[in-house]
Length: 303
Image (tube, rainbow, N blue to C red):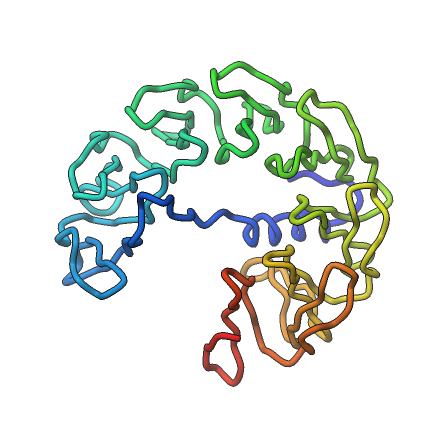
């Protein structure tokens, strides 16, 4: 990502892009969930009782989504990726250098240095011609063209918003963050700026009506009108999930070895900004189904 004013903003965008990376949620017909497991160097799947449901035989295996999971046949750079169903049957042959999870019925795939999208039958929906792309969300997929500008395509592969942004995030709650001249603004599905947030150093996608905003390395939250609803006073923050957002007190933003918040303590706030769980943990992850993983004294647990 190219930013003119400072290197803090692009690193912050990278950090949040890692935090926002989707973890596929199982559909109703994907329960019980299957988990990748490695045995003697080969990957297969177990269920939540530990029973092996798909015998380990793959070079790599990944989470199921939309009933399919990407797997690798062969190892290292010589391996190719395709997709299996929940019985372990290969339904899309291993023919890609890289294959992502399905989102909204489409998955991003790569051959060489070009990427595109396929549907659940393996049909190419968006040609494998883009230098980069990201999972579909809210009906649009984010792509990167040969000039390394970001734009969006629809499910038919038609360009919905031409690539013209320095960086962007996928659509969430009807808007997407698009970065120009180092500043993020929210656009609608036609590419029109609907919320000018250029006064912030960085902004992130909306979750549960709140979005992270940052000024001078201080983190807070805005609502969908752009109003600051949680003061930008924290040293780090994660998006809202299950009605709570993680915040950090005392940490420092670090870029190496990858962007992260180093040190400090983590706790949780509600949508009004009220601290409901005091910052006392060394690290946390988001709440899901009423629980969140937390780290304290090098030991993980749940709260």
